[in-house]
Image (cartoon, rainbow, N blue to C red; front, side, top):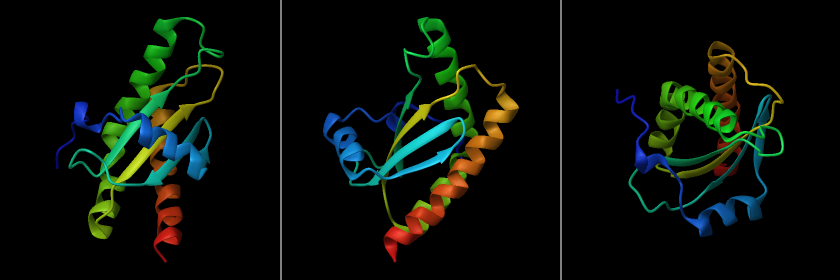
Length: 130
């Protein structure tokens, strides 16, 4: 299975990002808040994501960048959970992930939290399909 998380997974469309927040669907798993919506994406990938670390919490850019880099890596390793579900249901998903903790967490903890977050998201998506 492909474990890359390249440029085509990056959500850049302002319209789709605005749509995510208008629909107000979210899943929470500390330290993450994941806003999402099912929509047609401009690429053929099953999901696209924006990762945010608030400037209010992480004042220095290098701190924000490190947190986002760690989050991106955990998503890259756990994306198969989400992609398997989306392939079965022939859907595309737009995601906006916000890191909310006041300190940077280590990689192992973030990995488990991301896995749990994706597993929480799947039943929510199933409710929308039903």
